Image 1: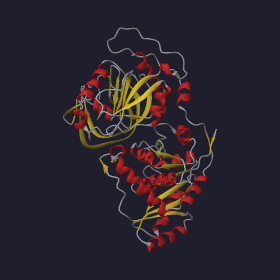
Image 2 (image 1 turned 45 degrees about the vertical axis):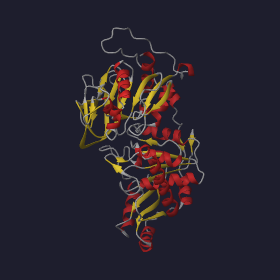
Image 3 (image 1 turned 180 degrees about the vertical axis):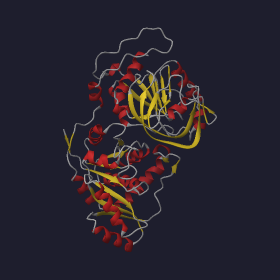
Image 4 (image 1 turned 180 degrees about the horizontal axis):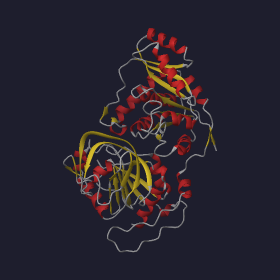
Length: 479
C-alpha cells in the first residue's frame, strides 16, 4: 500500500525554539481552512498531543522509533493519517537529538527520513543576525538524507532584524516560510513535568491554541507550507490496524492462576478473530484531569481484543463502570490531585476491592502511585504495600526492560522498551514479585505483580507488543 498524504515535520535546533507553538498553530490554522489535519508527535510525549487534538479534532498520535521500532513508524503514521488532507508532525528536542547513546534512534531526523517528509526548521533568531545562516547551513548539511525544506524565524525583533536574517539566509539556499515577531508568550503554563495538560485547563487551552493559530496565520506562508508538504515522498507501507496485528500475532500463553490457588488453568479461547459484540467485556480506563497520559493505540488494541473501553474519572466517580472486568490506570498527575483522589474514599475502596479480589489491573506511573498505601502522606487505594512521595529528582529516559514475573500483561521473559518520566519515589521500589527487570541504562528490578495487578513506573506503547492487550483481555475473560 502506498501512502501519499502530504506531510511536514516541524523541527528545531534545540528545545525552547518555538516548535510547539508553530506545530500546534499550523495544525489549527490549516484545520480552520477546512483541511482534515492529522497530528503527530515524535517521541514519548503525552502532553503536546493533547494540544494537537484540540487544534485538529483528531487524536494526537506519537511516533517513537525507540518504543515501537523504526519499522512501525510508517504504519502508525499511515494509520493516524488515513483519510486526512495533510499531516503535521511535531519533532522532539533538537532535530538530531535521539535516545542517549543510540545515535539517531528516535530522533526527529530519523522519523523524518522514515516518513520521507520535508522538515521545517523553527529557529530562535532573538540573539543573532548573519550567524543564522551558519546555523541553518549546519543543520541542512549534517545529514544529506534529511530534507530541510524551509525555515520559520521565531522571536524576530523588527523589520530591520527580519531584513538582516533574510539577507543572510539567501546564501544558505533555504526559503524563509515564516517570521514570528517577539510577543508575549502564548499562555501555556508549565510545571514539574512540562506543559499543563489540556484536560486540566480546557477553556484556557482553547484560547491558547487559538492564539497559536493566529500567530502562524499572520506570520507564516501557509500556501508555501502546504506546497512543501505535497512534495513529500510516497510511503510504501500498510497502515497499522489493531485487529490485523492481533490476528497475526501469536496467541497469549495460558493465564497464570492467582498466587496460592490450586484451581486448574482454564484454556484460552483458540480463535484469533475479533470477538463479536455479545462476547465483549468492559475494561475501565482511568481518565479525567489526574490521569491524562495514554497512547491511542493501547485503547484500540483493547477494543480489537474484545474489550469495551469505558472511561471513568477517579476525581469524580464514586464507583467503577458497571460490569468492569479489568482496570487500566495510566499516567498523569496524581500528585497534583492527591487531596481530591484521597477524598474520594468510595472509589478508593472500590478499586481496592476490585484489585484485591484478583481482577486484572494494569497501572503505569500515576496508576502505580494511586494503588499505593499513601501519596505524600494522604491515603490512596492501599492495593500495594508501598508509599509514594514527591521528589526533587527528575527520573527521565528510555528503558530496555524484560518482564520478571508472569502477569496479566506478559509472561516472564517478554522484552519491551518503555519510558520513565516522573518526579516521585515509591518505597519500596519493587515488590516480592517485581514487574520489570531493567536492562538499560542500569540493571535493576522495578514494579509490582500481585494477584491480577501489574503496577510499574514504566510507560509502554502496546503497538510494539500487541499480545499484551490480548493477554490482558483474556485474563479479564477468565478471571
